[in-house]
Image (spheres, helix red, strand yellow):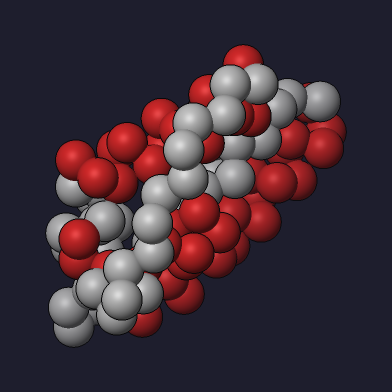
Length: 90
């Protein structure tokens, strides 16, 4: 699964910058190994809205809602099951 981060608190943007090279590394390894990539950053970016802390409480660790989003994306990508889409936060 792809590493992810959202700008929450004072370290949010620094975490995002730290995660970017790790995301690139994971994507490169997926290409080399032929593994299945479960993309997560775009899923969190889509739903975060003005309240990213509802999905990731400290910038990197998901809340219960964030865990549900990860499970939803995993089911879609790996198993092909589509659940109702998460609703972006206003």
